[in-house]
Length: 108
Image 1 (cartoon, rainbow, N blue to C red):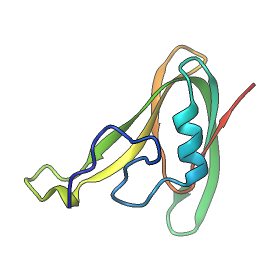
Image 2 (image 1 turned 135 degrees about the horizontal axis):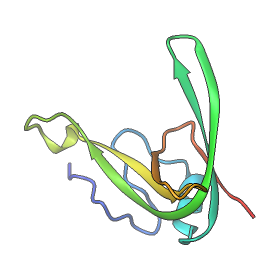
Image 3 (image 1 turned 45 degrees about the vertical axis):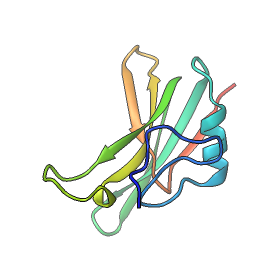
């Protein structure tokens, strides 16, 4: 099994944990720097509490974050997550990693 690259093909976004939903992958591939986006994620606290949080900003780029342990392990142990980079309204450069509960929308 090969290590996922940091470059996506036109039809896929790499992830060793679970694939990005097709509609989200399509939206992410179509985003252009400067577009305004809204990201909503479900946040879980403990075993039962859960709420949604939303942030808006100006899209900068999408790339992939390889996470893992600080020990030398096989590449298949790495977890690759999609990371969306944007600028908040207050000028702060920010990024967020996406999971199966993430929603990204283009804001007109």
